[in-house]
Amino acid sequence: MEGKYCIYLRKSRADRDAEAHGEGETLARHEQILAALAHKLEIDITTIYKEIVSGETISARPEMMKLLNEVESGTWNGVLVMEIERLARGATIDQGIVAQAFQLSGTKIITPSKTYDPNNEFDEEYFEFGLFMSRREYKTINRRIQRGRIAAAGEGRYIGSTAPLGYKRIKLQNDKGWSLAIIPEQADIVRLIFDLYVNGTRNPDGSKTKIGSTKICRLLDERNIKPLANDTWSPASIRDILRNPVYTGKIRWGYDKCQKISQNGTIVTKRNRNKDCIIVNGLHEAIIDEETFQKAQILLQSNSKTSVPASKKLQNPLAGLVYCKKCGHLMTRLAPTSKTPYAVLKCPNRYCDNISAPIYLIEQKIITFLKLWLNNYELEVEQNESPATIISYESSCLAMEKEIETLKKQLDKTFDLLERGVYDEDTFFKRNSTIKAKIKEHRQSLETLLEQKAMEEQALFIENNFIPTVRSVVSGYDTIDNASMKNELLKSVISRMEYIKETRNMRGKRDTDNFELTIYPLIPHK
Image (cartoon, rainbow, N blue to C red; front, side):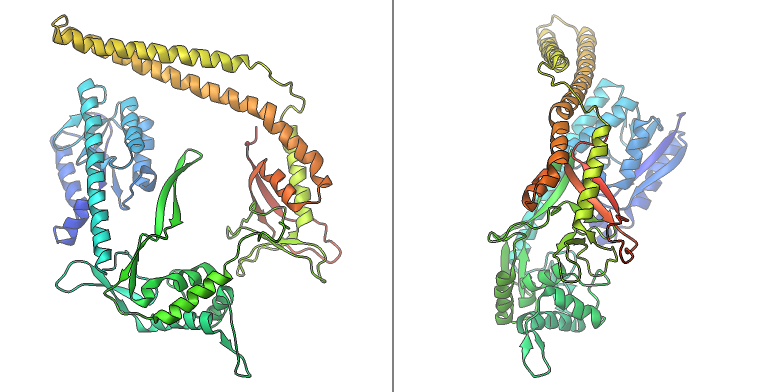
């Protein structure tokens, strides 16, 4: 077979289980099988994609992303894979992306059992059906695994893939599952953290002073005590340890509940704290006694703060908007002092060397940016009372949708005519294929119309809504003294800003805005 061909290799969950039982390395075995198939078919393999990571979605599989990009560009005549399920088994949208890439480029999928030609109508349907069945099997397996995890957690087994600080995972003897065993030197760190938080530090006179999570971080860093993953401690990691009931000999499962949401067309996973999670007695030994743990919970509850208490007013007009370009932390406001009689914006990360700057200087740069941004558009735009172009697109889309519905009815009728004997098989397949091709063509035209309509709507929105909003922010910002109102104005036109300053101002040069501010408007640049 002439042309360019490649191999795609990926492990399934069953493969990883088999490897755990000593059945050998899966990818190497699959590579040998596909290489032998290529030799038999007289195919020259130029590239082999080996998926090392295991991801539920296409975006989590880098080798698959590379392969799809090349398939879409027509690089390959065919891809060799053990089963079509190896290409996409996750979300339905991912399966659609894979199917579309191979169908539009005409790239063949070659497996040891069958070769799928996307230009062949029956192969196309078989391919789509195979992906559908793999998705169904994936969901069934996933439900079974989740039920097993919940049952194991209820029996006190440790379900997590990594052990928390102070413990290591151990395989249960003569039984399925895992538990935890104490690592003495790490357990001492955990006890120290609880003791510092609950009892405080001892003063020279023998008294004790309560300290919070931030001061505990500094103390641990000063003593050169390292956390598991990073070089320095963070207040969040300290609070996570203080809230974790595993240290009292319990198992907690389902505390971080994952919820998938769509943001700007991308699926992201959001973690929410689940108060109804499973908490049961575990099979492992406790590091912290229940009394100390409950004291820590009471202190955590009493020390919890809201970003803006109801009794206070927002003081930072840039709250929730400016991020440190060096470390990614959200920048915070530092109130005026006798030394600096003006509020400044600073990075809260004590190990970050990003230099602070007066808030009023940052505000000036924001307004200057918005003025320049307005100059990129026509400042005097007539209001479009009758958007004829959009109405025209809506009419065209409606007509196209009606035409697609008519074609679908014709397609259904071909089956009826075949059953009644009006069509023989040859006539049925020809007529069926012709109507399907027309439906596909009309759907592509409809997608193009919808994209053009969306572009026109965005342009109209910019002209009639966003530009006047930016103009009102520019003209009215300096006349407002209320920080909360300023914050609302900025958030109506800006989604995010990134700040960096490398050089300190010389004495007497306070108003020099020698910092870099990257601004992302809600509507991008023209």
